[in-house]
Picture: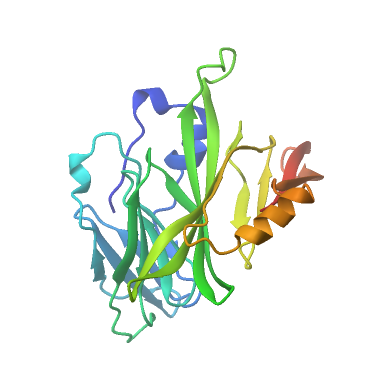
Length: 269
C-alpha cells in the first residue's frame, strides 16, 4: 500500500482524522467481496475475499500515469466507486481522474479507461462520488476533502477544512465524447465531517460534522450555453444561490456517558 505519513506541520486533530486514519482499502459497493488499493508503484490492485477469510492473490487493474514518488507535497491516493461501471480516482498530488471500469467483480475482465483527468489547485482525498443522468446527459458528482492553512485562525489550529463539490458532465465536441467540469462549489468548516455524501440525483449534499460548513465559492459553468434561460428565470425568482438547512443531532456516547452535538447540513444547488 502506498502509505503517506503526515509531515510535522500536519499533526493536528483534523489532519489526523482526514489523512492519518485514512482507510487505504476501498470497498466496491456493487461487488462487496472485492476491495481495491493503490500500491507503492502507483498500481490499482484488486483483492477478492472468499469465505470471509480466504484472500486471493492481488491483481493489477490499472496503473496511474504519474510517478507518485516525484511529488513531495502529496496525500494518500484515494478512490470512490460512483456506480457499477465508473470510479473516481485521485493520485494524491491534486489530479482527479474519472475512469470507466466496465464490468467489475470476480472473473470480470476489467479494462479501466480514463475519460477525464484534471489538475486541481492543491492535493485532496475523495470523500464520495455518484453517477447520475440529468437532461439526457451523464454526469458524475465528486466530493473532495482538504485541510488548508487558515491565516485568520490565530487562536485555533491555524487550519480549516474544505469540501469541494465538483460535477463532471459529458459533452460532445466535434463528434467526440468528452467530459468536462460543469460546476465547482467550495464549502468551509472547522472540523472534518463524520459523514458527507452527494445525493443520488446530484442536486444536493449532506454533511454531518461537529461544526457547520458554509459556502465560500460557487462556479457553476454552462459551457455549451444550454440552460441559460432557466438560470435567468431562477435569478429573477431569487433562487440562484445554493440553499442550506441545518439540523441539530444529539447523540449519546455510551462508553463515556457523554453527550455530543453534531451539525447536519443539507446543501442544494
